[in-house]
Length: 317
Figure (cartoon, rainbow, N blue to C red):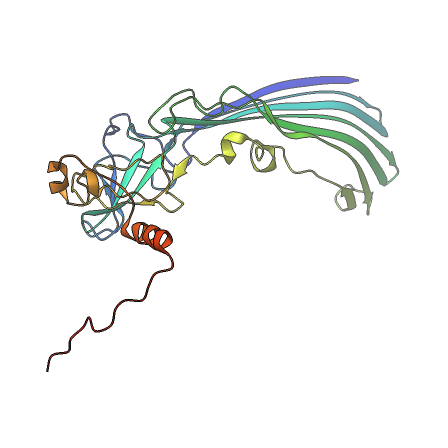
C-alpha cells in the first residue's frame, strides 16, 4: 500500500496590457493626437496612458492545489483512491492617472475627452474545486483492463472585499462597494473512464490501446466563473475602447468646462465658453422662454386670430 500527498502554491503578478512606470507623469492629462505627430498617428504625449485599457494594471493571482491518494498493487491488480482540491484568488486591478482623464486632439484642437470612473478599480474572484476518484486495473495475460469513476465540483464567487473601490474622486463622490456575489453556485459532474490495452506480440514493445473518457474544462477565475461579478459588469470608463465624449474647447483653455457627470449636451456660451468671452463682462444676466414659446403663448391667448389687413405692402415700379 502506498499513501501519498502534496501541496503547491503558484502566486504571480502580471501586467496584461501594461503597468505604470514608477517615474511616470501621473498628474498630467495625457493627450492623443489622432493625426500624424512626429510621423506617427494616434501619438500619446504629455501624460502616461494605456491605450488598450485606459487604466494601468495591478494584477495578482494565487493558486493553491492539494492532493492525497492511497494505492494498492499486486502483480496483476492495482487500485487507487484519491482526492484533489484547489483554490484560486485572482485580482484584476486598474490604476488610472491622477486626473482620470484623457484628451483627444485633431491637428492640435480638442475634439473629445475620455475619463475613468475611479482612481483605482478592483475586480476579485475566487474559485474552489474538489475531486474524488477511484480507479482499478486488472491484467490477464496480454490484456489489461482499466476502469475509473471521478466526481468533480467547481464553484466561484466575488467577495465583498476587493471589488469596486474605496477611494473617491470627482466622478465617484462615494466609495463603490458590492455584496458577496455568487457566479457559479456549483458544478457537479460524475465521469466514467475506461481503458483497454493488448500486447500484440507479448514482448511489451507493440500494443493496441483504446481509452474512453470525458475530460472537463479547467475551472479558472475568468469566463463564466467571473461573469456575475458586479465589478466586471459596471461601466468604468467613457471612451477606450468605447466612443469618447465629444468636446469643443471653444474658449481655448484646454479645460473641460462642462459637467461630465451630466450626460446631456451642454452649451457654456453664457459663461464665456466657445470663444464668446465677452459674455463674461455682462451684468444682470437674464434667462427665460425662447421666442417660439412666446409666440405659441400669444396665439393661445388671442385665438382665434383675425386675418391681417390687406394693402399693407406696396410694390414700387
